[in-house]
Image (cartoon, rainbow, N blue to C red; front, side, top):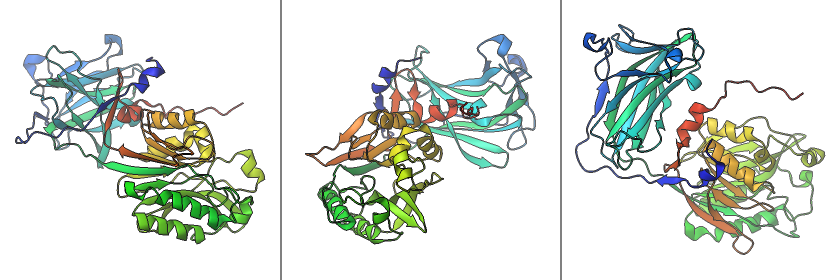
Length: 444
């Protein structure tokens, strides 16, 4: 296992525009047939397994492809340890060019597709040595029985070839069929850059919720010159500085606090996240609201993990992990004690959240960084007793606020690939190698 300290030494791959030459199609494969002069393998393809005794069964299957023609198959063959892949190498790769890899597959029998079916690109230099760790593709479309893997990558320095790997692992009673595989020169990667402002401020001795909220808004407005896309305020902004109870400051949605936050969002043309206390009948929730650029309520999240102190204060926990689509990407909301546990961040990331926005009273900055690293997401905290900072998917702090400088301003490059030394781009690898299929035991 690579020591954890190496994760901090992330190599950042900036998007490199494709040269203004006509696009090329280095490789396209479909309608597979057997070739008698190379042992029944299709031209240019080979099979691979770590050891002969755990090799699955490989075959060119007629009339099983997407168009009713031949496909490549890998069968577990009753061997629970079986691991193997079809492989081919594509030459003519130009470093710095962007390429789009696609491969379609379907399964039969018992196959855990998340765990057992993989498609990778392994970039090689002129000596046949690895130019960087392999890229993992993720599923992005289904058409009937067939699912497409797709991945865009910029060829690394020194790469002259790329090896396509189509794998089945640990599916003794299953088979995977592969067809319509291509590697195409692509347009330059997207470059979504999102400006975030997060606020570290703690009102003292205010006259009530409205006065505290106004202080937060004034601090946020002081960063208007940064032209933020997102503003993150702390947990419980209607309670901080008031010396009141949860019930005293609880309000329904929409309510006066949402109205003021809507004005802030509209005036700065920014999304705003803040923690308030929401009343629904007898229940009071610790809620984070998401306000869109026009000042409307775009969504809310009710804190799922309540510490004893909040239970004793009469709060009720939420029971879901919603994510929200913005004009720059998908976000998830968490609140304070949620960061103590891996499940909230994992649930949001599994739904495609790229940024976690965390209004928090106080907590562990180490765990906040861990949630960003383990889910390969950006995390933005706004706090009273913990660091108010912006963390990237490698755990690096992009900006941090303080008492003397109550706003932290950072640019999040959502499409930037962060490659961990010896491990590669963890954004896709995390989800393909995670063992979500193993049930967690109950605590005894």
